Length: 406
Ligand SMILES: [Zn+2]
Image 1 (cartoon, rainbow, N blue to C red):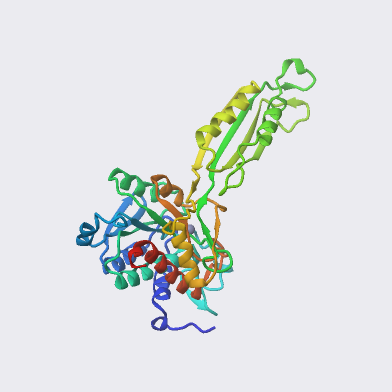
Image 2 (cartoon, rainbow, N blue to C red):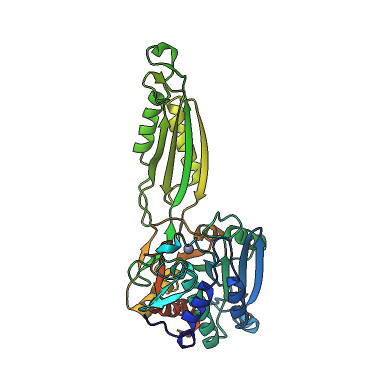
């Protein structure tokens, strides 16, 4: 095992190691944001720490040159209102069973070109790449158009109550908008940049209780069997065509995940049945329509029921436009420039903080390293991938904020 000395490391690896040495298990930040803020301040960013209860958030902003803004206001191609945002989180999931780690999770270690530590891929590697890309970009193009911002939270892996959603509320109250946002979540599958998430499905869950009347199975005239009553309605819900999806999303899917009833005795009709279900839904639907349609089916079957809804997240999509200046084009061109590969757009996977940013009207994508080891023991990222990610983020900044120079 050859562990190169820290002073021989490249800037992105050095910074990643510095961030990864801090045991910021959610919702702790452990000084990561202070470190990032210092680096950003040195290249002209104004930092604002937003603390909500146990969660530290960083909002950082570097505006375009003011004189230039005034000169350009009459131009057709004025991009000075553009606000580019790097979003991400400094918290990590717990290390889990320490005995299963080959190296201590908060002592970042490089073995055969792989950097091992909790958070290496999700997502302190991305944070380091964003910072180094931004430093280089600002140095090369100090007169860039628009603004560069950072929205960083320490509550992405936790209950996500005091993180990105509260920062967005604060920004919305000031009418401070984000135009384009890259969330540094590990989107890639086999090689860095091979997949970009340009949206996520919505998720809504429910706990349904259908009431009957308990009694002896031998006296059906004295009971109301909630299982018999619920079955046709549950069958109809599971067979319903909710939509046919669209260009970006598969058809909405309804899944029953739990079904519980019965006393354990064969001669007792139970008093109620409880069903848990979830819908992963496309942008063809919304929460209100789903609630209405599910309850219409339950009502049609004349059930006596209670239903509790949980709204996990609305769907969002950043559409591909054929305009040369579209955000997705800027990103896929950046990936092609660095890796020579075409990227694949995907809306698969779980939710991310992108769901809180997209509803403000921002175009949001997720682009980061490979996700094969995230949340696992021996989480790792390829050092080479982090170097490439710096270049990809750099070219994203260039393609969005330096279009005049083409
Ligand atoms: Zn993450």
